[in-house]
Structure formats: structure tokens, C-alpha cells
Image (cartoon, rainbow, N blue to C red; front, side, top):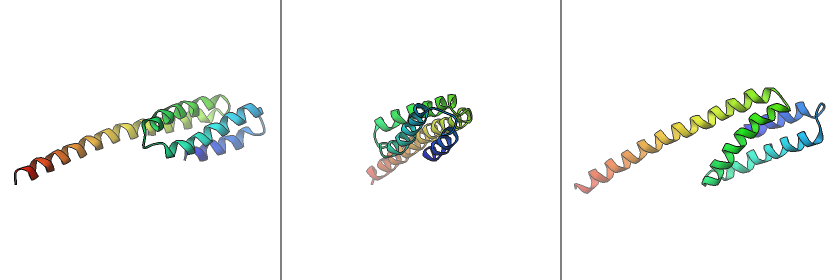
Amino acid sequence: MEFFIMGFALLLAKDQHSATALWIGAVIAILCLLTAGLMKSMRGWYLGSVIQLALIGYGVVIPMMYFMGALFAGLWVTAFVIGRKGEAIRASLIAAQEKGSGAI
């Protein structure tokens, strides 16, 4: 979704901003796509966090990106929080299964 948001931001920026601003936006959009494939490693998580900041920073070019970048950054943080809770629940269920199967 961030790729599409950046694509729409580039459409808004194409008539009023320099080629440098458009290239920076295009790099951010491409990194959004590439990072999706890296999410199984920690590199992907770190790069994804940097991209969240870049989306907010693109608000200098398109002011609405301040809001959209903050919205996606909030979703990013929420994914971390819920993911950690889910992993803790999963670990406790696995521990309970191992404890239960060891008693047989």
C-alpha cells in the first residue's frame, strides 16, 4: 500500500516539483516494494523503519505525506506491538504443549 501511496504522491508532485524530488519519491516507492521481500530478516525490519521516516519526510514535497507517513508509521508500530504479543502467546502455547507431552 505504501508503494501505491508514493505513486499517487509522485503524480501530485510531477507538475510542481523538481526532478530531484521526483527521483527521491521514486526511490522511496521502489524501496517499499523491495523491503516487502526482506521482511523475513532483521535487515527488512530496519529498512522498513527507515522507509517510514522517509515517507513522513516526503511531506516536505507533498504536505499530505506528513499525515499519510504518520498513519503508516503508526500501523508499523502497531504491527510490532501485536506481533510481539502474538509471539509471546505462541511461545507459551508451545511450552504448555511440550510440558503436557513430556508427562505422558
